[in-house]
Image (cartoon, rainbow, N blue to C red; front, side, top):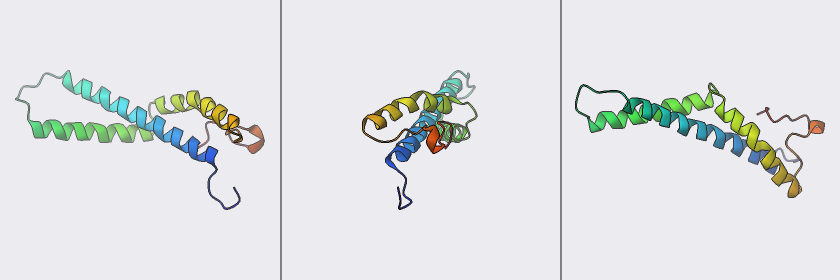
Length: 108
């Protein structure tokens, strides 16, 4: 676009990346929750402590997914990008991974 605003394809690509990172964060949070439940606790469950631990797990999981430590978000992105591109091409939007434009699927 000439006015400097991102194209529809770029917006969809960014939304896909964000959705993949969010999914990785949710999955990581679930893993943390499951690991915490497997620990035998020597004291009675405290509702405030459980709530705090759940918030901590969610926060850490979100941070990990944004740092690409696990690579799940990137793998999902690489798998789903061709679907988004095919949809855009059928709608008349140029491909995101068009070599002529110098854009590769792994670019952010």
